Length: 562
Ligand code: NAI
Image (cartoon, rainbow, N blue to C red; front, side, top):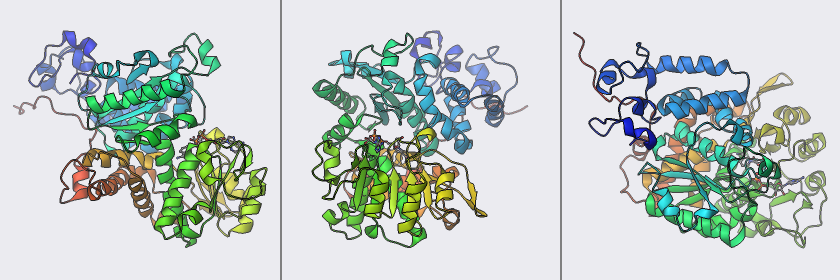
């Protein structure tokens, strides 16, 4: 069970193979630090190796928080938390789950973006696995080096398009690590069942290629067949070594993300969070917003700024949700429009990438967003462009000219890339916009009313998807699961949330949210014959029973006090 075999040699093991002495202190999955009890210290040969007083986990959390809050910058806070994760995962998750709202922006976007950019400079200890192009033909045997036998979720990236920050090569490893931390914090994935995976196929990032501390293969990015074959070998090897694992694609570039998803979605238990997870969380936000406007999705015209993975993924899920409401597929598609860096995506434009073609409708071209808003009169505007300031006063006012309560989601991350701030959306619309963003914004007071922007955080969805798949042992992740997750998430938004304009449930309910979404996802797996376990009598209780809690294991029972 030891995760760090290199230090296993000094371990005399007891009972169920538990390491002792320094080995257990250095094993982050088993370590309890100063919380080892006296009986454990005696039995595990820890006497003399720890300061004498035994602390509770709550007291340990207090110490961590004191240090954490004393840090000057978010990056220092990130480094502090990762250090804790490397020493004591139970305590790390106790801290994270009890301060989730405060720490989500540190362990994930926006701070994780900064941490990735500085990856080679702040690196302390390895976590997860690295596969390079030189490993072709040997992936399965390399996977067998991983010390855990029951991996259930792999998050893998090739680092080409990290958040909105572009090609970070091997430095993108912070993303799979952060995402898997959220799987555990939000949905209780046992940390021993998580595997962050970096596929290092090189980078086009010149600054990294010249950086003496860059940690990846120093070469230009491998593309085309060689890339696809390596990813294929990885997915097949993962299924062989860990047959029940879910493989999540994360932050691949457009030219690989769409074809890889098409290639693998019906052949393995896999999904792409940037495309499908984003789509589900955004659709949930739209469903909630429509509760406020008392309208139906089928009647909405949606305009996207940005026609990449997020935009196209959301567009496709909206089309299928409109069809579920009774729309004709073609008509549903023609109510979704995209503006990219060259203007409105329309039929006949010669420069369109394949993934945009299904949304290229017959229409005169519009050179920019404002002219497209005026021409198409959308009720919903979604920013997934990474262009800050693009939802300017003129654009928001044009939306208000069409709709009493326009739905405006500025989803680009990190904060610096957001199409507008919450304050701008509310101020330009005089509080009429129903606003959500990708990165968090504080509440605003507009004309005496407090408005709380919702955060369309993928963490509402992917952990629940993972837990649902894990519980049902589903063989696939299907579109029906994402639609079910979106509906379940929208249903969890309370009247109180809506009253302040928040179209997502409070983040501090995320564990409850994940369990509800997991049950919805598992139900689809059971209904559609994808589950590999028999259906339980009580689905919610069954899903809940799979949730790992950050509580110390008792290795040695306490002696009764004399
Ligand atoms: P992507 O790189 O696949 O797509 C970005 C798109 O924006 C590309 O099609 C690009 O051509 C377009 N674009 C660039 N400049 C533009 C301009 N001047 N005008 C119009 N379009 C322009 O990236 P992806 O995955 O679609 O993500 C986009 C943004 O959405 C990122 O900032 C990402 O962090 C954010 N995002 C937010 C999520 C959330 O809030 N839950 C989830 C996923 C992504």
